[in-house]
Image (cartoon, rainbow, N blue to C red):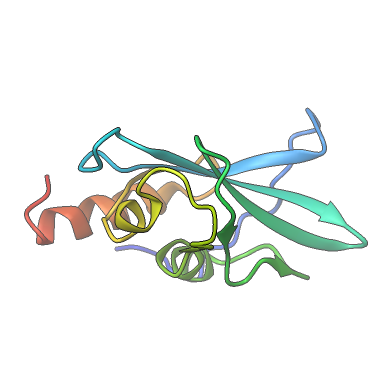
Length: 124
């Protein structure tokens, strides 16, 4: 059973000012796009940023938080990502309409959640 309330103790292991909290891979996209979600701390708040290969401006909800996100909040962030269409490169909006394969060092059930969702929609 997936624990949607799970919240890791930290995002940081002392190796740098930002941390990769989730890696998303979209195998059905034309180019097999990847999006990485990072966290860093600015003025006591966690700030989140999504980066794809093209450098598109990806809007996140939430884009910052006073607390580390729960698994449910991270899933919401991933499933509501939007691309700023002005100047978007690649076919990013179509990519985001797909269901990613996911990895996370901090959220062990994230991979399972998206794996089950992909299976339900016949993508696995």
